[in-house]
Figure 1 (tube, helix red, strand yellow):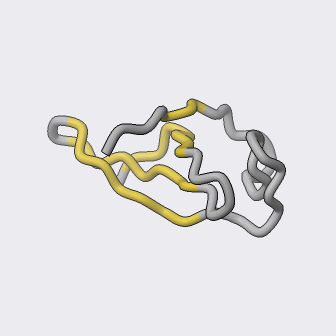
Figure 2 (cartoon, rainbow, N blue to C red):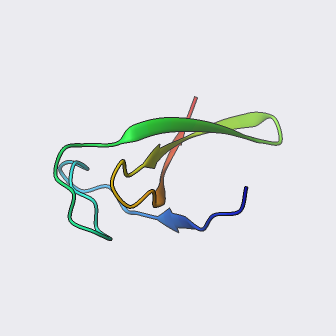
Length: 56
């Protein structure tokens, strides 16, 4: 599956989609990057994928 990952700088909160304006939060996704696991977010409306720089 091919998709673009959009990097987002965290401000006070990340609840609204900056691409389509959806306002009810995000789905979570996890992606292995070498030895690290990235915690990313998917908009339920437009399916854009966002990376806030979080790792688990």
